[in-house]
Image (cartoon, rainbow over all chains, first blue to last red; front, side, top):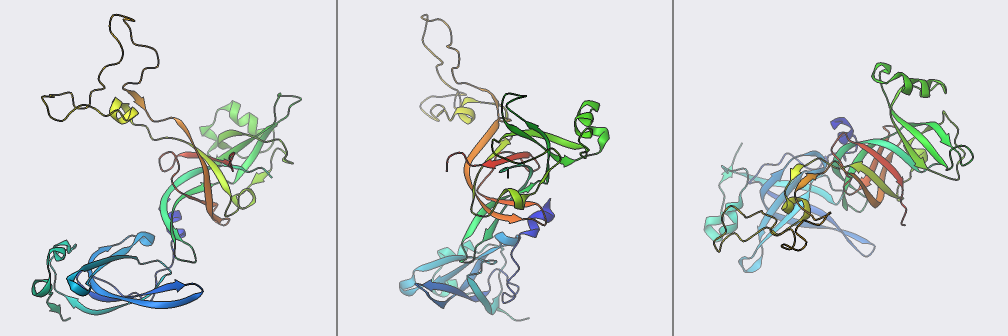
Length: 115
Length: 210
């Protein structure tokens, strides 16, 4: 039965590397405006990573102007996602980084992980 | 062609269209079904087609069931269900597959047997509100309250809603959209939820209210 569920899954996007919570990423999303298509970048920290075939998703948080946090959830198998670039790995000790929501400025920094 | 099939619920997932819109989809392993009997107005008084689904070890069927299938040289089939159909050119022994019966974009009604909930209270079964959490209420938070009047009539009217067995009912969900037809794997993808547990028997018909 599970094989049949897997049969209708979309192919994984090859331009999405392996992601981890805490990564600083820039997500390139295809956006349709009328009949024109352009690519928009959304850069931030992965605060949640959900696995599971067609339902796999990440939530990316970034600080917009005036210190307002913006979070967007992207479905990783969606054809709207062009690619994802991992800009740096960070040291985190949690799977879900919801504590970042309460932090701004200096306390919202994460330590870079080199590997 | 008859717009009806018997199938087995596989489970839910989500699929994307070309624009990237994600749809919640229930997958059904639908067919192939065999026509096991054609009912005619002259002989039975109404028109219908009996379909059979799921080949099974002949030991699991009664000799009556086997005899019914054997006269028409059909394989042993576990489930037989009737579909009302007037204008069709089906004969006993015909095979119906998903691709023949349904196409992407069509509307269907889906019939299943809902998940059994056992003996359920009035709050769960009929969406009663229950009682206060505070203001002196003790041990009565999910009680149904009064079921009727006092000495007159001195009894509870028949049909008053209360606790009792819930689920395991035949449920029809109307007007669902077909979003996927996979002829190779006999798969049917339907937008939205479908009654019953995974592995449950499902009947799919053309939508009555389109």
